[in-house]
Length: 180
Image (cartoon, rainbow, N blue to C red; front, side, top):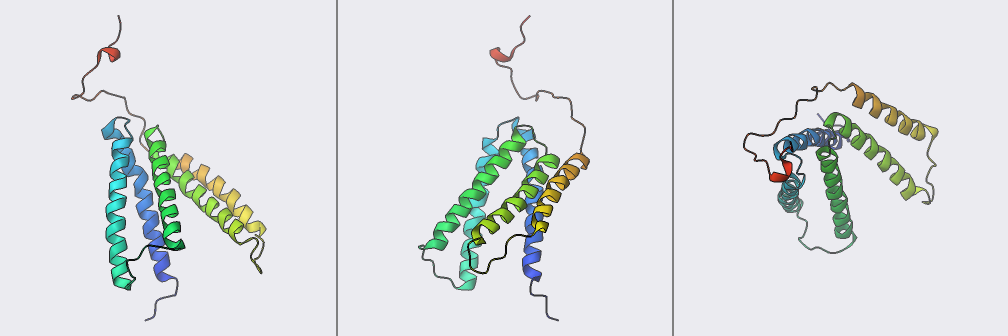
């Protein structure tokens, strides 16, 4: 049995959605354990990216027999893409650590990313010979995406806000002690 031509891209896209969909809730848990400090978990995000990118990239290059030479536009744009991904991870981390909840932040991230990707694709191809102008359905889809972001973010079940308590292991500094 022959698989459809778009089978693997769809599988990998679905896995990406799974991983990135779990990313927001995972950093929300990190937020709970770090009491508002976004930078220790963000450092670990960077270490994880570094390790998995090196292992995965080296394995992929070995498997496809691509030489380990690093020059040219592919390397430059790969670095730019990685930088954009890292900044996206930073701003997502900061959104969660500044009180954003995954059920509201993640729809904005993914709906916004789809819209930015569509606009970027249009801008990259608008002056290419034979390129088609965007249809009204593209713009309708973007408006629909914005509506869907609001619907998903407002209707995702989530726990009621808990009572804030100070961790038992933490100590109060003189600046934090209540005045009488």
